[in-house]
Image 1 (cartoon, helix red, strand yellow):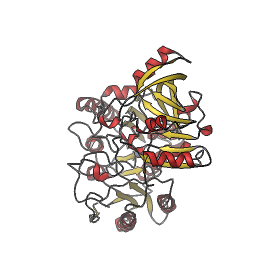
Image 2 (cartoon, helix red, strand yellow):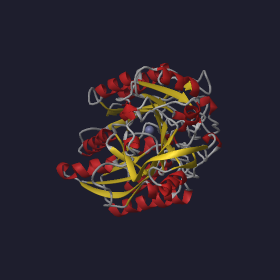
Image 3 (cartoon, helix red, strand yellow):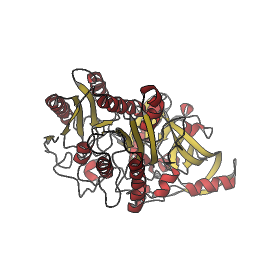
Image 4 (cartoon, protein in one colour):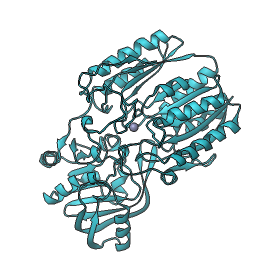
Length: 490
Ligand SMILES: [Zn+2]
C-alpha cells in the first residue's frame, strides 16, 4: 500500500494589506521531500508526521511530497501558488501508483485567480490519481468547505478544537479512515449542511464546548465515522464562505443527512450565542485594572495576526501608557525594524524609539517613546499546542509600566514563551494584553484569573456586518438578519 502526503497551506485574509509570496512560505514552512523535521508537526503538516510514525507499523509506504505553509496574511501571488502546487502535483505523478493521499491543507487559502485553492488542489490531484484512490484531507475549521472539495475528496476531517490543540488527533482520524477505506472495512459517504451564517465559535467556552464533546462521543458509533464543523473564516471575500456541517457515515447516506441536518439546525439556533462579547478599549482596561487578582488577560482579536492582521495596532498600548497602567505586558507587536533598532541599541539601552502603528490605516498611530531594552533574543519561537511557531528575532522594551514584546516574524500570541523568552513572566503581571482571537487560551487560559475581550481599531472586525464583502453568497446571517439555512447541499 502506497500513500502520498504533502502540505500547501495558509489562511488568506483577502482584505489584508500584506501580500503573500513564496518568500513568506520560505520564512515559514518550506520543506522538500525528506526535509521535514522529526520533532513536531509544523502548520498543517500533521498528516505527514502521523503518516511517518505509523507507516512501518501499519504496513504502508509513505511517499513524502513538499510541505509549504505560511502565517495568515493577504492573497497569495498567483505564479508562486502555481509553482508550489505544480511541484507537489509533479511529485504525485512520479509517485504513481498510489492508493491513498494524506493532504495537510488549511481550507481558507486564496491565490490571485483562485478563490478556492484547496478545491483546485484536490480536483487536480483527483485527476492524477483516478477515482479509486482514497483522498484524505485535514483542514482547519476556519475554512470554506466548498462543494468542489467535498465532491473530489473521500474523507475530509477538520480540527474540532478552537484553539486548535487537536491537529495531531485529527490527522490520526484522517489516516484511520483512509486505511479503513482502503482495507474495505468502511465505505465513507458524506453529507454537508449549509447554515448560512458567519460567526466565531471558540470551543473553550459554552455552548461550543458541550457541542464538541457530544460530537466526539458520536464518532465511531452507529455508523457515524466523522463529524466536522466548518466554523468559516470570516475575513475572505469568497462565494462559499459560511458555517457548514460535514458528516461522514459508513455507507448510509440517509444517516449522514439526518445527523448533518440535526447539528446544522442546532448551530442555526446558536446564532449570536457562541462568542464572548467585546468591550471598548477603555472599558476593558478599566475592568482589568479594577479586578483584584492577577493576571488579567486582555485579548485584542481585531489585530490578530492569525487572521491576517498586521499585529501592530497601538490602541490598547497607547491607552495603557496614557493611563499609566503599571505591571502590564503586551505582545506581540510586529515591527522588524524596531527589533533591529533594539538589537543595535543593546540590552539595557534607553533610547527614543518609534514602533507599531505602521502597516495600514487600521494600525493606529506609531508609539514614540523613551524605551528601555529589557530583553533580546535571536530566532525565538513559542509553542502552540504540540507545534512550534517562530517569532524570529525579538525584543522587549519597557515603556512606563508596560513591557512590550516586538517580533520579526508576524504571528499571534500562542505560547507563554512569547514573553518568557525575554525574561517577562506573564503570570506575575497585573495585565497581559495578547493579540489573538482565541488560540491564546490554550496557554494563557490556565494562568488567567480573568479574560477580557476588547475591540481595538484593528482590521478583523468582530461585527461581521462591517466587513466589506462583495462575493459572498447572500443571504447570510448576520449581513441578512433573516437568512434561512440552505440545508443539505451534498
Ligand atoms: Zn483556524
